[in-house]
Length: 301
Image (tube, rainbow, N blue to C red; front, side, top):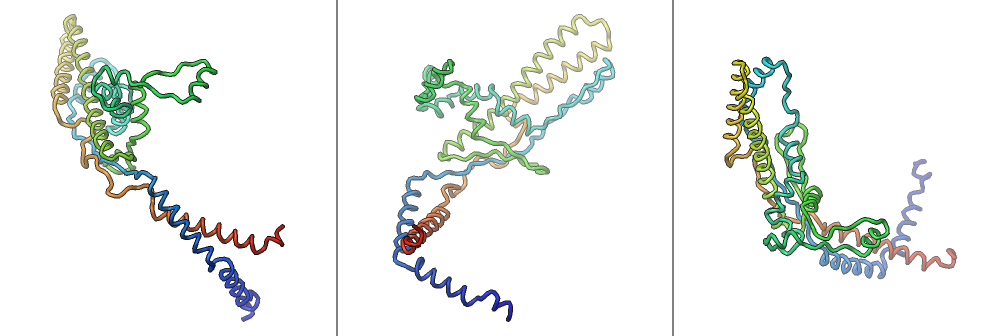
């Protein structure tokens, strides 16, 4: 009982009741709540819903055909051949963020769909004008550098890097490709195109590399006098032809699509409940503060 007397709970409860009766349970608070509802409704109306678009990928099953040939080459030439430490996910992310992927996407007209009016005429999407702000123009004039007049594949590369993310949790076999957008239909179409084009770019790059190796190996084979070296060169040619045969198909090379790009059913922003709740708290607090100042203005000033 001594503890209860020390804290004087009855007095604190009485002070709290007086506070609520004088500052909270008044008509001004009802007006503030009504104003907060109108304000929240206005904010929700002018806000554009933002959706989460994602796709799930998994490492594709690829055939390994060169391990024995690499070992033979190491034994024959006395060199060490190390495997590439980067996995399919890292390679996919690197290719997706590269300029060469952006250039391929640009040539297919995606720059026009993003920065222009969607016209697929090559003469148009290679001359889409940039609209620079007055501040940008003033700063460039003072600093002495030129602004680009037209959009290019570099702008598309920046767009891909800033909007699409590739994530893989430690120990998880699936890879998440995701973006947040206000136009979910376009985002789904664009993400699907980026995934397919990234994988095809990886294939084309390896096919080009294999063709170069075959061409150079044929040149060495034509002048080789050693039978063991000639056999190793022939194995290399066969191995590269086998790589090309495995790559010239419609199967995925790096990552296989498990769940195609799709959008969340409900928008992730704006949070309607959070907007209404936070605005109600702000307006109610402002009402209480105004009532307190009005009742105690003589003591405050």
